[in-house]
Image (tube, rainbow, N blue to C red):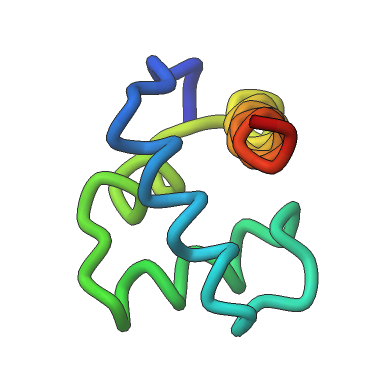
Length: 73
């Protein structure tokens, strides 16, 4: 695992995965990874496998920030 770029596609697919309500905690990358596989969110699934934990957490923070900004708009 290594530092991977957090792309717009990754953030978008992560937001989609969180929005399903099927994960208890978006920080649980294994639960989100299983959901990404089931829903064929390929960019997110690849990112979860290749990214280190800190980078994954950054992606979760970004996804949540986008959701907060959307809620305030």
